[in-house]
Length: 482
Ligand SMILES: C[S@@+](CC[C@H](N)C(=O)[O-])C[C@H]1O[C@@H](n2cnc3c(N)ncnc32)[C@H](O)[C@@H]1O
Image 1 (cartoon, rainbow, N blue to C red):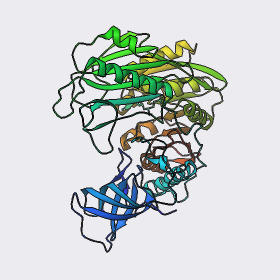
Image 2: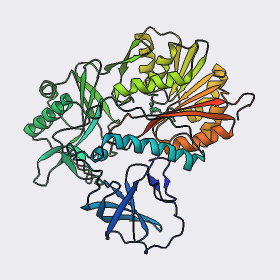
Image 3: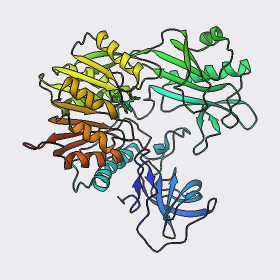
Image 4: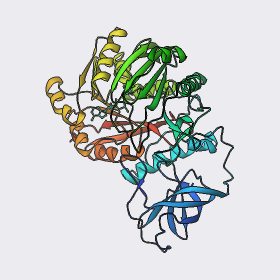
C-alpha cells in the first residue's frame, strides 16, 4: 500500500495533515485558491482525505479515495501542498463501492469495510513509525466493529434552511459552516433516532420556527441532540435553541423519546454544551449499561457528559484496556480523563482501588453516582484538570501501580506526560482516539524508561476515518522512569 504523501505531518489536535513543508521536489508552482486541478489519488492521509499529486504538487482531496482520478478545486494552498474539494470524479477507483446513503460523517462508506480496516491498521503503524520513530511498532490486527452501520448512540444535528427557504435538520454540508442539508436517513444511528429527527423537524415546521443563522446570529433553532441507551432502550432528545419562548409541553408530546430536554443559549459558538437545560419529559440523565467482565454495569449519563458513541464496541475497548492492565486485585489504579467513570468502574472489579480524574464536574458527579448505582466502593473520583491535578493527586494518594489514560484527540502535552511519569506506574494503558498524537506520547514514555509492548486498534467508527487503539507500556525492569 502506498504511504501517505511523503513528509506530510499530522496536526496534533485534529489528526489531519498539517502545514509542514514537504521535501523539495520537482513540482508545479503553488496553485491559487479556486483553481481546478486534475489529481490522481494514490493514498489516504491521516484524517481521511485522499492524497495525490498534480504535476508533482501534493494535493489533499476530501472525499477522494486511492485509485480515483478527480477534478478538485483548491481551497487552502501552502508552499508545498494544497487542500482541495472534490468537484468531479473523472475516473472512479476500482475499489469504490456504492454508498448506502449520503452522509457527510461517513466519507469512507465508498470503501469496502475490509479495506477500511486494513487502512486503519496501516495508519496506526504508520503514525507510530513516522511520528513516534518506532522501527517496527507492535501493532496487532484491528478488532472489527460488530455493526458496520447504525452503531452510534449519540448524534448532534443542526437546523438550517434549504435553497427554497424550508427548515432543514441534518448535517453541515462538507466544508460549509453555513449550509445544513436535510437528512432523511442517518446510516450511523438507529431507525428510532431517524424517527425522532423526523418528528422534531415536522413539529418545528408546523410551529413556523426559524433556524439560527450562523452569520447574523439571528433566528431560533440551533441543534437537536439525540442519545440512545443501546442496552437499555432509553431514548433522549434535546432541543438546543436561542433564548425565546417555546410551547414546551407540545414539543414533549410530539417527540417519540423517553425524555425530552430543552437547552437555551445566548452564545455564538457552535456548541451544544452551553446554556441552561430544562427537562420537559422523563429524566435528565440517560441510563445505559455495559456488559463487562461478566457483570452488567449501569451508567447514568448527564446531557453534556462524554460517553463512547459506540456502546457495543465500548465494551470491546474497555475489555481490551482491562486485559492490558493485567490486574490481580492488589493494585492501585489511576484512571486519567475518566469521564463518567466507565473504565474506572470496570477496572475496580479487579483492583484494590481506582482513582479517577476528570475535568467536567458533572461527569465526575455522574461517576460518583455510577459507583453507588453499581455498589462499587473501591473507586473514588476527583474533579480537576490533568494539567494541574497530577501533583496534588500524587501528594494526596501516593503512586499508582497502573495508570490508564484516555485523553481527547489532542493527546497529552509533553508536560502532562512528565507528570504521568511521576506516578511511577508499572504499567500504563493508553486509550487513544488519534494515533498521530499517541505516537509522540509513546516516544516520550519509551525514552523515559517504558517499553511499548503492544498496540491494539479497535474499530469504533466504521465508515469514518476515526481510529481508536489501546497501547500498553511497561516499565523496563530496574529503570526509574522520568
Ligand atoms: C476521550 S474522553 C474519555 C472518557 C472516559 N474515559 C470514557 O471512556 O468514557 C476524554 C475525557 O477527558 C476529559 N478531559 C478533557 N481534557 C481534560 C483535562 N485537561 N483534564 C481532565 N479531563 C479532561 C473530557 O471531559 C472527557 O470526559
